[in-house]
Length: 353
Image: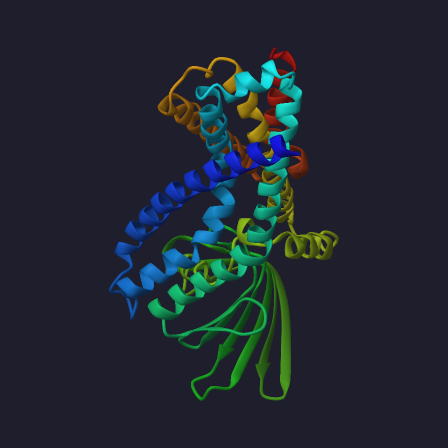
């Protein structure tokens, strides 16, 4: 229908314009943050710029719900300011019909988010981390699962990162002076502590001595190393940067093995909920432009969109901490911001005349 296409074109055009502004600001802030690392190893300004550009698809995915709300407010607001919405209402088009047209734009943006978030952002974010790690350090390698790094007589293999300075597991190879294998250890979980030491949990080790192999198991082991979690974190993706299909494989594969999968479970449902929230972010603009923001300017609409978007972002971050620290159901907490946004949007649309 002509009305659907017109509203779709108006909303998506405004959302993409807002996204361009947000991405430019995000890229600027990311590049400024890289200044402290420039000069370490071979990491130069061009590497920092490449790191920033490779990280933009991930920023695109994370900023899209906020941009959808602000862009919808601006797009529909321009129609209201030009009396086009008034003409639509006078022609018998209901608020619900306008909301349906807006939801089509929301679905189109959701499909865009799925494409970028699942197929473009994860590999480019991983490439950005590896570019930075290769430039800053010379003794890192990526082969198989996780990151391999040489630290003196130690050879460490850190598996998937599950949090700040926390990893799903670690292999520890201890070498002799003549490069023979002295011991092989496996930790179910590894946590970086102060002074670049590691606390290895559920640690099992096999130590080689002549023709004998001595095995031992310990609940924890403190491992002194000059390689800390901040370094290995450059090379390994955090749960929030992993695509849905990989998160699902991690959750289903490790859930029955005694491994804490709550960070991955929350990241999975949060990613789904954040994508669905785009539709309701667009819908929330409808009652605002028909109600309190009908005669408001661009600045007022932008400010309202920013405030709601920031509240949505902060709620997600607070609930992420609650899911991990307070042992709350990750699925429930991940959906709370989106369900709240959906409830507010639908109630306000129903009350708009």
